[in-house]
Length: 209
Image (tube, rainbow, N blue to C red; front, side, top):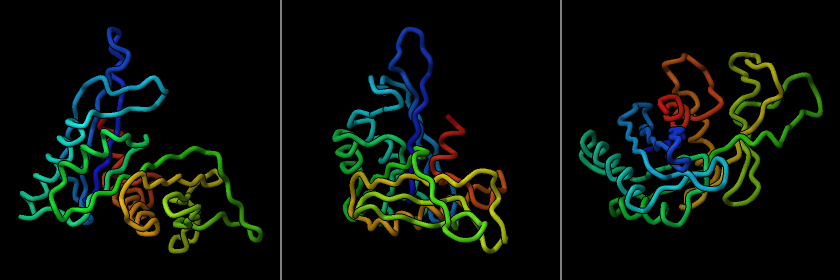
């Protein structure tokens, strides 16, 4: 089970910290189950950084788990939470507290910082879509756009920029996390995109936001 967590500022002139938090849940089959959002003072003094209090973090996971149980009569074995900002201690405690016994929770930060480009030493084609560069056990770069052998081309205009993947908490191996993210870039059925640059978890929550 995968949850995409996205924040959007409400631009409230009376409260510069007010933002809306949205969570879109997807199953490994590609089904989107539920969207939950709440408004509060989630923004921080750091630009682009948002955080939930422990109770709100727990509430999102609890609602998503309940929706999953309604459909499958049991909780998921694994729960992956995708976000753009690093989860802080309160959020991690809230996520874990709401997960039932037997459900492994992993929090993953996914960004596209545009500070790394990779070029092939030979040939005119760009790097292969799905290429992963592991920095250490929890950090790596993932090219979700690039040359696609099945299509015989690279459906893009610029040098592909990788996603920066960071496992903030949890014990899932990085190669599995990367493989899941590549698969989730192929589930944007509404736009008929063969291979989107972002996983559907973040893309849908971002669009709704």
